Length: 224
Image 1 (cartoon, rainbow, N blue to C red):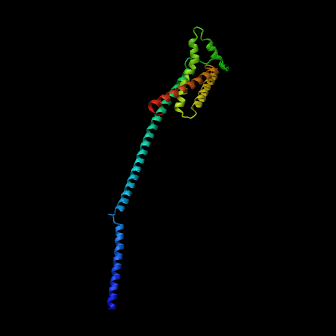
Image 2: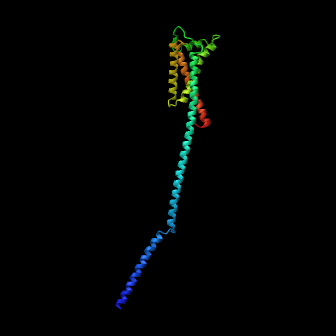
Image 3: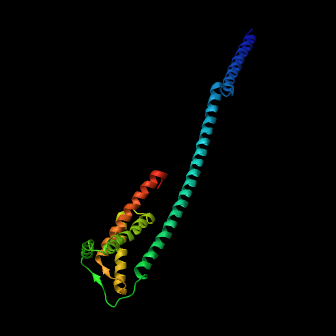
């Protein structure tokens, strides 16, 4: 009887162990079961994150390509604009040299100069009412202003600077002084301080024209 009890007790213990192990293994399998809805949802979330990341990367690549193409087009347009403006600016300077030093210009035997500001301007204004001098006055006063307006337009259009007005003023003044000094030394024409004043004013007027045209261009095209 004691042996039979021991056998029964051992059988019960073995069955309990087997059941507990089976339950343990069953839980493990159910935890890793792909049919489990929690596992499927986590896998779908990770796939969606990967898709979103790939879409963002593709969008960033496309945006960079678009920006690169736009920058290339803008650079080409800007380079073409600068080249065209530079060509006309050089042509303008050649015409100025031709008119100031070649056309109807012969060296005189004396040095002619005027260092008194506004003296020639006053003299030209006083000759306005004199018959036959109106064209002469227009040529001397307005001609010096108009001739330097292209200079004040081309300089800020070609040479970018935050201090454009200062650049235009100094460049117009310096270029005029160079012309007047050259005329004095070669004795082709005369050195006139009033010409320096009128030419510098013409450069400033040209800068104002540049600002107006630039504003109109921006309103029409929406770009600089």
